[in-house]
Image (tube, rainbow, N blue to C red; front, side, top):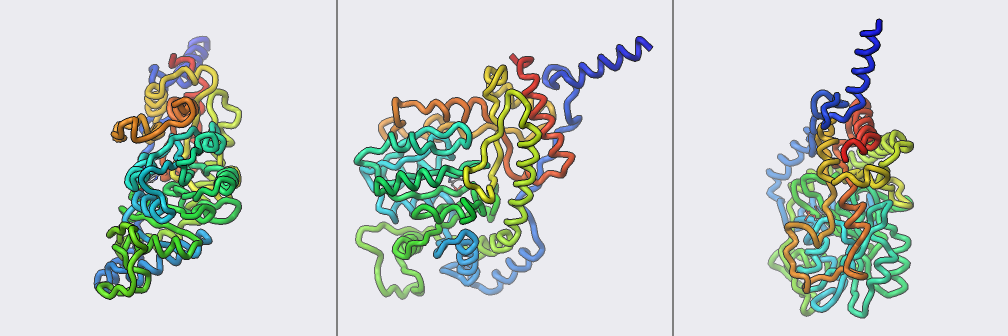
Amino acid sequence: MKAKRKDAAHEQQRVERLAILGGKPVCESPLPWPAWPPLFERTAARLREIYFSRQWSFNSPTERAFERAFADHHGAKHGIFMVNGTVTLQCALSAVGVGPGDEVIVPALTWMATAMAVHYVGATPVFVDIQPDTLCLDPEAARAAITPKTKAIIPVHLYGSMANLDAVLALARERGLPVIEDCAHMQGGKWRGRGVGCWGDVGSFSFQQSKTLASGEGGICITNDDVLAEKLYRLKHIGYGRGMRQGQAQSGPPAGLACFNFRSTAFQAGILLDQLEELPALIARYENAADYLRRRLADVPGVRVQARGREASPQGYYGLFFIYDRGPAAQVPLARLLDALRAEGLSGACGTYGPVYRHMLYNMPPDRYRIAGDGTCPVADGAGTQHAVGFLHPWLSSDERTLAAMGDILAKVAERAADLL
Ligand SMILES: Cc1ncc(COP(=O)(O)O)c(C=O)c1O
């Protein structure tokens, strides 16, 4: 009897001990990576049709259909389809008139493409701090960073949240600045019921392989402004205006507006048309999963979940992040935290991008960018980088058992964080 009790206590200790320290992992084998992107038979048939139609580019019917459907879905008047979500930002900046000598405000925490687009038009990115709850652009930090050279603001709707559009738009209106929403992570997300991307002057989206709408590569700008829409179209189509046939230009682009070939193809548009139909159901599923994890972790000390956008309805997800910045967890180095989560079975655990100006691939010399304030972004460098761990959106499609295991892992590591020190 005594031996049995001892065995049970020993087993209990083994369960409670972190796997990285020799305890029993929450999952005996790592959780399997969910498959992404999705595959549909009807898309395979559609791609075949496009192939035999010989209408592959130059404003094809499929491209037009996708532009219309995507713009409608987000409540925008125009959609301009392009090759990726970096050139969409670049064209948006050109369209609103940003050029050499100008400054553009961007959040410190984002994928570096947001800042590179600013460099591509010859302007200077000014990195400002993020809000501790949403991990998105801090409107007050943006306000403090404005100078006479500021010509635009790019809020980024990052991972599982949205920038505070009300505050950013109020600031932009007050200062007469255009707003370009970087919605690369936010396909189908709505702010107070209206699609992201059409609150600012231009919304820019990416459809790269890992995104919630994924065509391998692709991007789109949406806007409600007829003049900007025409400029964006000319920018991506080497100067042709909408409705002009190849080789039959009837007018040229505005003087000095350098235009590109950033055209995408009907194949990408065809893939996206089918995925767009599935998007509301996909986001609803993600919302349920994120809600479950929020409830599961609500009373767990040491960890908090990235907050939804303040007026998100629904919230889109490129990923979801968990911030271990309280109690002993706050002392655990990020790499150790990730190793501990992976040892319990959360194989997809990853860190954030970190501030652009610290990214290995960001090779701009310090005189080509500015870090606002006193030259530091404490939240982006701290909670946004050192303490945030997460996973990409396909994990939010997991079944109930897997989600429960994910919640248990995230909680166990928070509760036992002191053991990692
Ligand atoms: C926030 C953000 N902005 C812009 C981009 C650029 O998109 P793309 O990779 O399609 O060029 C990405 C893509 O990864 C992104 O995450």
